[in-house]
Length: 353
Length: 132
Image (cartoon, rainbow over all chains, first blue to last red; front, top):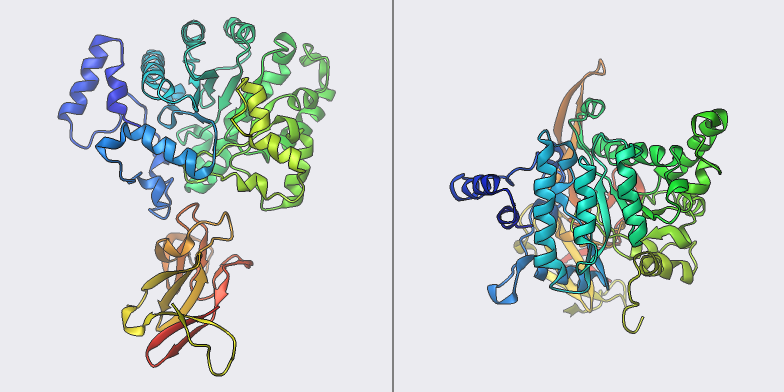
C-alpha cells in the first residue's frame, strides 16, 4: 500500500501538511499517523517468509499502478473471480491514542481506496473501514459511501475496546440493515494489550491475540441480542480461523442456560444465532481433519463459510485448502469457494461459472 | 536431461543434475523435469534430493531459505537462556508459510510423518544423478 498517497487524501489541511512534510523530509519514515504494533516486525519469522518481508515483484511503469498490477496478478494466479480487499495497515487504528485520528485516517483511506482501486476494476470489492470509536462518523461513512463502486459492506476492525452493544451503535446497525449491507469484524492482534504482554514469542501472542477480540465482540453481539434487534443484518467474523467457534458455542450455551435472566433479549440458544452468522475460513486450522469436519458441522459451513485467501500475508490459504477437504461434497466446496459470498454480497455470478 | 539407466537397476531412469563441483557446502540446485521440480542439496558433504512441493500447501519449499535449527538454550535446572542455533542440524523453510524441514531427513523435526518426497541421489564419476 502506498501510504504516502493516502496521506494526500487526509482532509484536515494541517494534518495533511504534517503528513506530507513527514514523507518529504524524514528518512526511513514509517506510515504517517498510524499507531505501530511490534508484532508486525515478526510476521516474516526472521526473513523465513520473504513475501511477508517485502513485496519485491517487479512492476514496470508501463504496467500501470503497482497496487492494481499486484492485485490482478494475485487474482489470476490464485484463480479468484472477485477479491475483497482490506487495509492491513489500519487493523490497529482502533487502539489509536488520538481518537480523532481514526476518523481522519479512515476517511482518507476509504476515499483513496474507491478512487484508486475499486473504480479501476469491477472484480475488486471492499468492506469499507468504519471509524467505530465514533458512531456518528461511522453512520456518516455508510451514508456517504454505500453505493460507491465495489462497496459491498462495512467493516469494524476488531482490535479495540468499544463494546458493540452500546446504544449509540444501534443506529449504525439499523442503517446497514436498511441498506442490506453486511457488517464484518476483522480480527487482528495487539501485542500491547496487557494480557498479551505475557507472551514473549510472536507465535503465542498470535495464537491467542487473533481470536481474542472476535471472541469478545461475538459474545457481546449474541448476549445483548443484536441478532434479535436487527434480524436482517448479516454479520461476518473475519480472519480468526474457525477453531474458536465450537469452543464459543459450547461455552456460551452452557453459561447462558445457567443465567438466562442476564440475557433476556435472546429467544433462542446462543448457538442458534451463531449458526446463522458468516465466518471467513482463513487461517484454516486443519491439522486434525476430524476436528475440522466437526467444526464445519457446528457452524453450518456449507451455507455460512466463506473462503478467504489473506494473500499476501504469512498465513495465506489457497483455494485448495477447501477443495482438497475429503469430507466436503462438490456442492459444499462450490458454496464455500464462492457461492455463499455471491449470495451474501449480492454479486453477479462470474461468466461461465 | 535424463541420463542413462543405472546398470545395477535396469529401467530406473535418472536425471542428470550437474557436477559435484558445482555444489558448495550447503549449496543447492533446483531442476525441472517435465513439470516435476526437484531440489538437490549438499549438506555435510552428502547429497539429498526432495520434490519442490511442501507437504503443507504445495509451496516451493526447495527454493526457501536455509537456516540452522533454532533450539531453546535450556540449563539442567530447567531455566532458559533464550535461543541458540543447533551445532549440526540444518533446516529448509518453505517460503510460502514457514514449514521447516530437516534437510538430512526431509521431515518436520516434530512430526516425522510429515515429510517431503525423497529421491535417491547417486554420484558417478563426479556427476550427480537423481533416480526418478
